[in-house]
Length: 242
Image 1: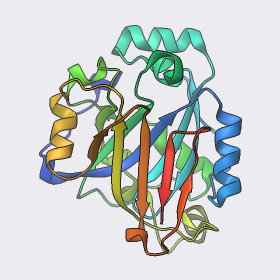
Image 2 (image 1 turned 180 degrees about the vertical axis):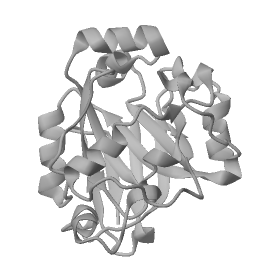
Image 3 (image 1 turned 120 degrees about the vertical axis):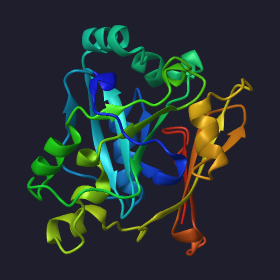
């Protein structure tokens, strides 16, 4: 369970974006679309049996994007009972109005790389460690905004990513030639007051929160140097700028 993990320092100045999650009911179409648009994904499907979910991951130099879907509805319901995280509503966001996003945060300093393998299987072992630490319990129950949580150093991208590794270079190299996330904007569809967790991230410029008629994740890479724009909607509520 999330709250059983060792505590992580949540001083906002010590946190940065580690990864972003989009929950989807159309995983095949979503992953295929991103690949066709020029993003390279890990070949290993990551399964979190305790959640009843599976995912495909797209790695970049400073974050990764995880596309998550449901494989076992019974486990998803059990996970909700245990953690108050309603994955089913987020996957079915078009019907429920829930935010289909989650934000994983890491400490800005991390431990040295630990001895997992460099291939997709080794990376999956690391990311499947049960190391989430939620720092705002009210955020878990607020479906109108993204789930926010910090993770242990063991799971952080900066802990295991080795730029000198050929296998890792293959993971973060994309036909679109995009490298680093430089701006993050999230559109919410409801005008409720933000929980402290999301307000904290916004006030320290980790994310910009917009209001609109549909949820949307706007990711800007490399300060939009190429001047390009890709709209992945309606398959995913995602816009890429690079």
